[in-house]
Length: 68
Image (cartoon, rainbow, N blue to C red; front, side, top):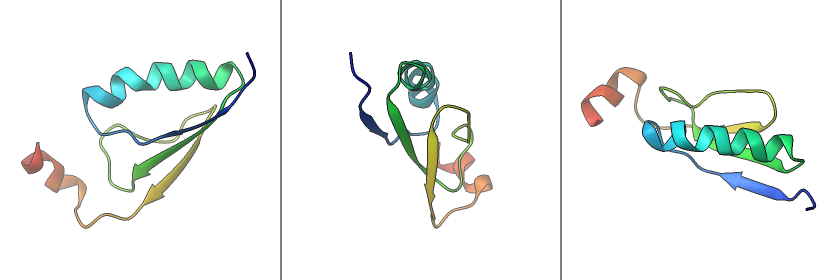
């Protein structure tokens, strides 16, 4: 199949842990993957194979513990 473009908007936690492997494999198969993630995150970060774009949020890393 031809590589396409994919926009991924993950959430912290198990959702991202499950999606990370899928995103990585799609990238290796030629898809252009852009990850849109909050600037403050536990697990979502930069990696090889896809582009990460961040957006500002009104909370800090310490606040995530109380939210979850």
